[in-house]
Length: 392
Image 1 (tube, rainbow, N blue to C red):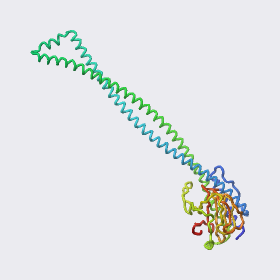
Image 2 (cartoon, helix red, strand yellow):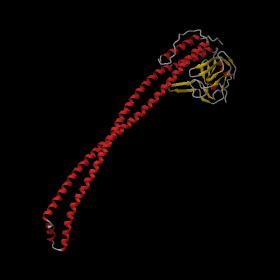
Image 3 (cartoon, rainbow, N blue to C red):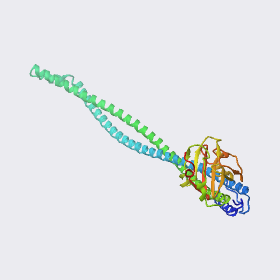
Image 4 (cartoon, one colour):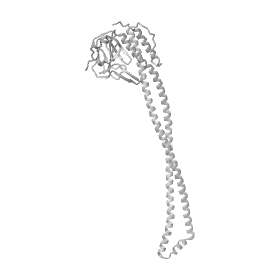
């Protein structure tokens, strides 16, 4: 295996490119610029790589926060839009109700005035008739009754006189009742109009408030979209950073074509279920499909992690996303990677045997629970570990 100084120049240049991409974001926590140069030791290269990747980890965390705030603001905007549409529909309904009530009130008031006029006229007629009877005494009625030709005719004339008086009084009473009903209906319609007008004013005030809130949230959404775009430019450097990791592994591992991978009898680093396979997944921040370059094996915290094959430690430290990670050069262009460790038990340059404990399970880096992210790489290219691990 070649010495650790091999291919440092190209790796350093690539790391410098990562720094340049990160600085484009112009946000807090940007990586400090350093001059490119060759001849660094393995520990210096690893230290600089760790620093770069920690800064990128912070950038992704910031992007996650911005994205979360953006999603919440968008949801709030949707809620306000729905409330505003509901309020506007309610305003339209109330306006129609007010218009209909005003029309009914106009009709009722017209009927009330007409009935009131008829009642006044009927009362005047009855009053005139009573005054006439008072002036004439009972002579008028008596003359009608005394003109009867028979007793039967007398009774008929008497009933007609009574019916005439009762009819006049009945018509007057009906008009009086109609006047009272119309007056009550008018009062009810007036109160209904006042209530509808009050509700309409409240709805209009709510519409104004919602429109103002909607405008404020829209400003927030626009600002978050801009911030998200800026932060994504920072996180965009992660691809170059991953390339830097691959280049670093390739530069540090021994020479070979990787064709001898089938001669390596790997063992499982831990005994647990695969919680996340080697497959493509959709990154909601980058808005694209990305490869999950290994398998996640779920096991309890602090479970010992065993070397899947014998090799030499070429990386033992922090890498963005991976957290605490160990990379072994297994020879012939083959390497294995063990990420998210709570504690690393080996050091760079150490030779380990298959099954040797190289660290303890944790959830450092981008991890939502304790597990081991395990990779097998051939000439720096990730392969599906399941194809090379023994069947269980």
